Image (cartoon, rainbow, N blue to C red):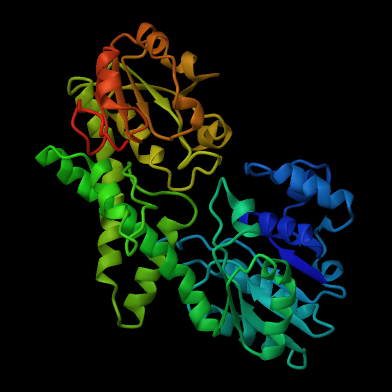
Length: 443
């Protein structure tokens, strides 16, 4: 089989490379000439573990290629995927679909045989029908069907998520389109992956419903963490106690400074706007969006409080600025609220991140970027952990204490144990846990 993948961003590049690993011939298309040239040289423009090897292997095998020419890419394809960005539109929070609709027009101009046009981008309900209308207007006699195939990839583990997904959701407008999509995903039948075939609108809504539910779960445990601090409870024991209930599940019950990234912030907001527009408001998700926005701004105050209530003239060492580990994605990262707030309060911020500093320096002016963890700590008045990279989980605490002016740590990811930190002589602050506690016998 042959497919064209429009867009070589996170979704398009990962999906294209993974389809080629299935044996599909994939041509990835992008308007960014520099990006295409980099990909042809074997340079991967995003940070995703294992992606460089996957791309190199399939390029060498002749199954994966890159081009600026959509007409060339669409020759003989069974399907063309739209995997372009759908950022939040400035001013109203709706998804910006201009790139999707632009791709639809270009596809229409190059349709010369039956092709399934697939929206892989996260799009609001009704987008697939609009894509169909655009193509019909430009090419009234074209033979095609529309499908929706939302992605459920987590940054940092995207390849595994694609190769061994919980499910594949396909919204198809005809049996013929559904059969093409089934053939593309045939390798997953061998591992008995559920393939959910549904309507176009249902598939589009499923992606938003999944992401907003997970965002709500994160926000729930963050609010429970705040309550734990007031009553002296341990949020991790609470999370374990409820997570073992099969109806709830243990995932996404880890407290932190708020969700970020390329999906949850924009998808929750887009679904809120869609629901309001059709007169069926989602009050729960509206509250989730509001709480998360406020939470990220509140985190700086925790750090300032740990420094005695004033950071004027002080240096705060920040470990991690990406929104999560194993990615360089800075989109809606909590650091984008926390770091500027610390600077506005008079602090100098010295930061280190294993992968995201090249992106972060464009977004966080005035930050002193360190070459490694211990360089960031040297002479700082306080250290805070914003991203739970593995290399931050086993720091040499004696060395950390010796480098800091004061042994103060604000752990916004709860990766250390309060008892251990107290024994090491730290003034330690975390989320939803007493300052020092006895280790649970079940831990």
